[in-house]
Amino acid sequence: MTTTLPEQGTRPVHKSSPGTARGPRRPGRIKRIGLPYLLLLPALLLELLVHLVPMVIGITMSFKELTQFYIRDWGTAPWSGIDNYRLSVDVNGPVGDALLHSFLVTVAFTLLSVGLCWAIGTTAAIYMQDTFRGRGLLRTVFLIPYALPVYAAVITWAFMFQHDNGLVNHVLHDQLHLTDQPSFWLIGDNSFYALLTVSVWKGWPFAFLIVMAGLQNIPHELYEAAALDGAGLWQQIRRITLPSLRPVNQVLVLVLFLWTFNDFNTPYVLFGKSAPEAADLISVHIYQSSFVTWNFGTGSAMSVLLLLFLLVVTGLYLLLTSRGRKTADA
Amino acid sequence: MPDTPTTPTALTARRPARSPMAPPRSFHWSRRVFLTLLTAFVLLPVYVMVSSSLKPLQDVSGKFRWLPSGLTIRPYIDIWSTIPLARYFTNSLIVAGAATAGSVVIAVFAAYAVSRYSFRGKRVFTVTVLSTQMFPGILFLLPLFLLYVNIGNTTGIALFGSRGGLILTYLTFTLPFSIWMLIGYFDSVPKDLDEAALVDGCGPLGALFRVVVPAAIPGIVAVAVYAFMTAWGEVLFASVMTNDTTRTLAVGLQGYSTLNDVYWNQIMAASLVVSVPVVAGFLLLQRYLVAGLTAGAVK
Image (cartoon, rainbow over all chains, first blue to last red; front, side, top):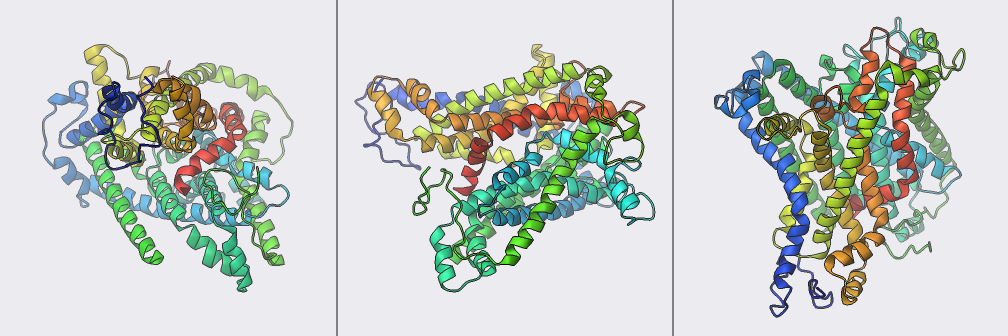
């Protein structure tokens, strides 16, 4: 059994070529080749069952007329070609129109939320770069929104946004007299801002964490050299800190974007089963149109369209940001 | 740990780089203002949660009050009888616990393979697994729903509506990130250590469990906390795939607000009670978790 792992010294780490060609004399060779796959097997099987197979089913479903009559035996549902897609993107019909509206709301919401999360997280991280009294405690406090279970936190926000007995109206209307009447926060146009507030409250600590870690990898000498050259604090931030954070930001912004765009938990807990139109995020929209009408075919088509959109955006994003970085380095 | 600013090691927590120039006074003032406001923003819901959970019902039904008219622990007693909270709590514990255990064990094997071996399809595996992270959960919801229903109909294995189906789902959804985090941790364990174990006559699994796993305990703890938090807080699949007896806290907690009276003080008390296990775990282990979370992004 001692030969099942090749010696480190003789094995160059080839990431691209399989390093199994060496050592045909060894008796454990077959075992050695098989072992990594054996170790991966449980993970592979689960990924297959819970991710890949459902994805194939989802894409198949989107080409079927899958109403509630066929749910018990979905294979028998009649094919409908691209009808589901036509329905989803027909902005003159009610389904396509609602989907487009939901999509635009989600885009606006995501841009604002990611921007704010990033800005607050980065500012806080830069402010907390130096040690000061209470820094450790503050860092722990800042992680609370991230640590709290989504529903517990969002239910609390829902309470704060209540019309009659909520904190927000009490402060804005009763104490500060900013509004003529108590506002409705969880229905109507205001719901967009309520959702945005909760989303930023929950999301910024992650940006904070990642940027904090990124800041620690910036060599000390860069700041010293800049200071010697007479660069002020703001210039140091603009010329050293932010450019050095670029690779970190590239990943961070993408992850924030995907999470926010796909967020289901926050709107679902905040508004319950029927989200107000102004805060009709796409995940909840698809969920509702699937489980209210029990038309899974159309719901699947919408999901596939959403996936395609995310793939294209992610691809373009990585292409653009990576190219920009390369030219900056050159 | 020694402060060595000249070696930019990735994982070890170094002291933050300090700006050598003393920052101007305005910096300190703006910092104080910003961080104070931010702390208030962060803690506001926490204060509402804690204070409201100790208020009598009339305090939370009428106008909001910053201070309770009187303190009571009644909500903490009543939460258990208004809805079957204990059952939901047990369900959440079972589901999150089992999903965490499964996710950690399977991720340890997979990450060990990726970290220590080179094999055909390695890159395809890591990229494919990781990319499932970006897919919207809603994409999997309807097919999984159908898949579980149909597996139940044909084989009699009840996945839909059972805790087993939920465990399987959460386990798999936490797997990609768990593997990713663990690869980072395993890579940071020197390979000489498993070499030595192999020379001493351990098999590869012996090397994994006697050397690599003990050396990567912080990473494994981080993965466990992450998986538990994710499973504990998930709403989308829990809302579709559970029934009355298998309902988890994520869905069950909404039971307080569908009644005629909304017992906000009880809702806040219950929210606090269900938050304690994860928040305590997270804050106790934050050092490990933060290192694990950030390692991949910063590398």
